[in-house]
Image 1 (cartoon, one colour):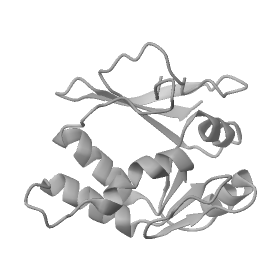
Image 2 (image 1 turned 90 degrees about the vertical axis):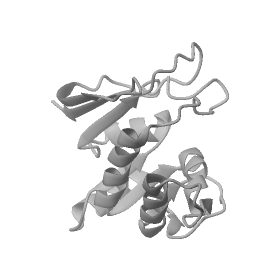
Image 3 (image 1 turned 60 degrees about the horizontal axis):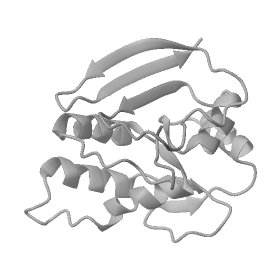
Amino acid sequence: MYADASGGLAEFEPAEPEHRFANQLVRDAGDVVNGRRMYEVMGYWDEVDINDPETSSVEAEFARLWRETPKQVVSRGRPSLGPGAAILEGDVVKAVRAMKEADGPPIMLGAGADLFATLAEADLIDDFRFLIAPVAMGQGKAMFGSLTRPLHLRLTNSRQFDSGSVLLEYVRT
């Protein structure tokens, strides 16, 4: 499960090592493609006061990187957009394919099951990174519930964090 039954994300506070990993992903990204709900969750980082002494340096760095990185939001509606964000118009598969074919840094995907399945089944995801948090939800939304066919993956790396979370990295076989 990646979300509870109402679509909310499990409460998990990443420790500094997980945050540093996330910072590097955003630092390396040329664009971020988000589903609407994930974009709304990530909107928190547009509001963080990076000059507040209560904000850790790793969080301030993430907020700065998030604000600087262009974001494409896949949505049927018109959500409020923060800095550097735009609605990804038209056919999402064609739009992401065009982004991938352009020269530039990698595209980062933050999405729920439906958008994930759409892009995975169109062979538009090169690297799969799953951070498994030490939270058991019981009922909720399955990350792979929207796939219409199996994804065959090969593990390329794994990393255990002190918090108990595990990062699994795969490529398609």
